[in-house]
Image (tube, rainbow, N blue to C red; front, side, top):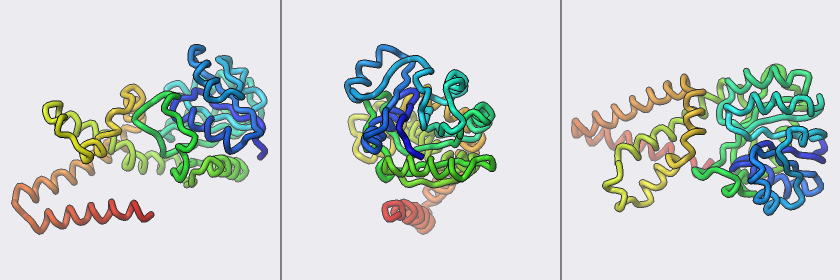
Amino acid sequence: MTLSRIAILAPGLIGGSVALAASRAFPKAKIVLWTRRSESIPALLSALPKAEIGTEPSLIAGSDLVVLAAPPSALVPLAQNILPHLAPTTLVTDVSSIKGSIEKSLAPLFQKKARWIGSHPMAGSEISGFAAARHDLFQNAPVILTPTSTTSSDTLQDATTFWKSLGAHVLTMSPTEHDTQVGQISHLPHCVATALVLTAGTRALPLAGSGYRDTTRIAAGPAELWSEILLENRADILAALKEFQGSITRLAHAIDQKDAASLKNILQEAAQIRRSLSHS
């Protein structure tokens, strides 16, 4: 697929980073940005002076690729607004960190209207908004594609090629498997970081070093977005929290019983798993 016109809707951290990265990866393509707020246009034009930017959904007409980067709760009305401006050959994807409910909501809307496939870049920051966007955000980052039985091989291939062009390495899995695994590796850590911050409170904050900062960084993320994510993926997150509770109970028991051998085994098991990350 030749990309001559790439539209990104809602250029916050992820959408903005897609725009910045795509402008470098596809220098001949027209980058199109839809923003909900007209007051954000000057900042967007400053960063992407050659882009076409506006607040009307019709802006995306003629696009080869459309990236929906709005929060999950805004995706359905946004999709409905752009339907008249799509072509059956248009590739449409999203960047949401939940996939099961998004797939059920969006796939029927795009049927015979465009080529749809879910995407989830495993990249980001606790800082939100276009000001935090980076052209290199997806370099060496995993991007998960979630094809279903109705996804054509061409659609999967085109989406894969696009994300690889931005520097990502692409994985594929079902929407259901995505929500389970991301619930464990992304959503659960956010819950844990939140609990750690609340437990430690403010009294000891002057003592905070790199351990506290690294462990709790994601707790500073936007509360409104994260409350959406946690509620949408609540079944998988609750299952992950139950497993986490079991790990905490196991750790607490070893400490309570002064069981040095068991405690050492628990710590070594965790250390070995964590160290394997840096070599993967």
